Image 1 (cartoon, rainbow, N blue to C red):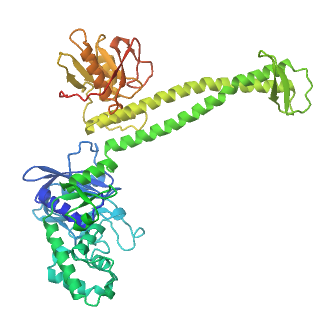
Image 2: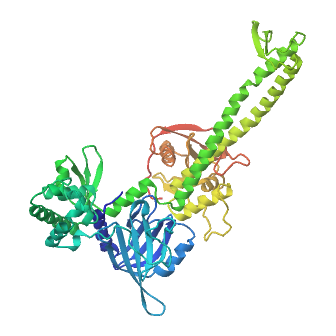
Image 3: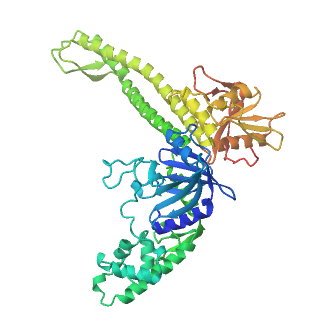
Length: 580
């Protein structure tokens, strides 16, 4: 969600309301280009997200639980300087896409140090730069002289604003001063719209068109064609001043829907847009909430779970490609029986003369009725030698068929296992749950093992539990390790075990004080369908059987089982209403 400078002023107003005067309690680095600040204010704790990666943004965030387990060296450095600092001011620089957070921190020697965090939201040139008393301490992205001749962003360099940010803000001038500015710079642009953008920061197409519409002017109007320019500058200055006053009070955004069903966001009602047929779909929208929703849809934040999901998706893609190659080799191996038939026929007819022929036509006495068959030959070999060649190919293909089938089955099993880990990751709600899945990936050899001990012991009994009205209990595993423990160690032999048929999902156990009722079985099956990849489908097949009928094959991966004496029930997924 790209915001122009003037729309960004509304976000600035929101940040001033929520975090100005607050104290930075904790700083985390979510990924290489994202910082996450926990800020203690007089009312409550607020969370500020700063990201300058593929979707640059700065917004009030909801709490994030999926954070990296270990801080980076940059994170530790920034914690030393910024934690416990108080945010004294949040401002926008010259209505440009640059936010500045001013911080004061009481140092150990008793003096107050001044810091600034510059968040430059300028597309591919976005950056977050931490400055102490005018000198750059660190930045999320370093820019060397080889990368940019005009501006270097490295530690110990003096901070300079980006080129082009020396234009002025409409908020800083009265109506008469705005008129004087337009008059002063009228020779620097050809049209009205170009002049506004030459003098003032922050104008996107929507607000530029609105300003011109309110002044009853055309933005593409050539300035040199106007004989009497005084009324023109007066009308334009009045329009700019009224726009600035409205923006100063704006704290929310309005969502418009265009004639082509496209959604656009603006900080104030657009008279010009209404004339074009746009209509308001929703108003009083929080800028931070909109930005956060957009970030989540794009998956721009590379949290621990996001990185692990990407790794698993790549592993699944690689394994599927391997699976296709094995399948192709197996289809090629189907010629084995034909090669044996060629060999047998050549041995039967070995007495026939064959003088450097590329093929020979024989009666196929191995089928009924007998039909003629043409067999390709190597001209330099005799019929017996050609037969031996065909026998050799037959043996090779038969061996490949046996080995290939084994590899194909293992490949299919590995794809199912990787899919099950990816599904488990979708259930992980915090960093601890992600760490459990990460440990499983380490054991499976998907990622390199971390030899540092985990700060906590994983609880294999941390299942999802739903009590039923009948007194029965539905127990659901959160990941493969829990599924394995739940099915083979925790569940009793006569408990019922549920799992979606040929669909990745959790192991579900139904523990009843007596005989399980049909209603409880249907409900447990519906919960099993909900805790699977088919949660958004209907008519999901779910297998269930007694736990004593579940077997785990030797050397099989976590969560993999075989079962017998099962029954299948077709249900629609139901989201459990009772607390976990």
